[in-house]
Image (cartoon, rainbow over all chains, first blue to last red; front, top):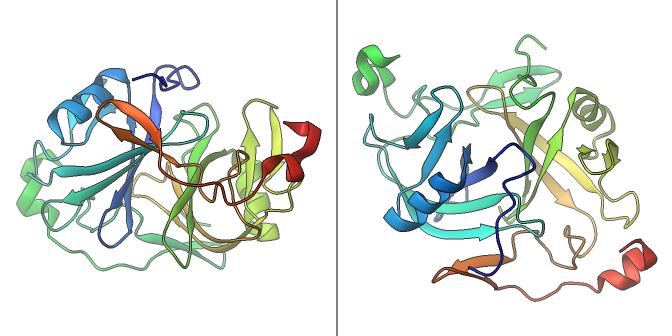
Length: 128
Length: 128
């Protein structure tokens, strides 16, 4: 591709915003390195670089809650990605919510404003 | 607030996804340090930390295209923010588009899929 993504600003990583393609809800933010981006494009499933595990991470590899890529866009500085997806399964968040963004700032306090969409212990078992 | 944001993973910064509160369109991704986050909460206008200028950056300070905060959420790991806003002015992107995400991946090429919503030379003048 003629326009290269800028992986240099964060030491090889760029943030990837994951948005539900039908509802428009922002589901999570992950980070991709160049290999994760290529894997995402080649396979059609969102793949990240896990900073905690220091390796490529196919989202849903444990839970089955994969993210089917519908559209990939980049921003003016080519240092961020917006990936519109169809999310397989009841929720993206490993804590059992549809979206990782389930806490809202309310008068200086973070309060949960969503209910769980699934029980994470039945999906992740002893991985949590 | 009882739950602290985790600014440690990216050397004092967290990504902040900016989403139009009415259309749901993702407009940009910026980075906030703790001071930018506090400023955003206190003033009600999205304020970032500019990595290129190494200082706080009130979005719209030059263009007038400020972002009025409607809702702030954080994710499960408290290392990302989703800020729903009302965007003042015709576009958020300094290149003249409604959203910074105006290029789409199409068969391995990044192609512009949006039209400009304003002429950036009339807004930014010699700043570009």
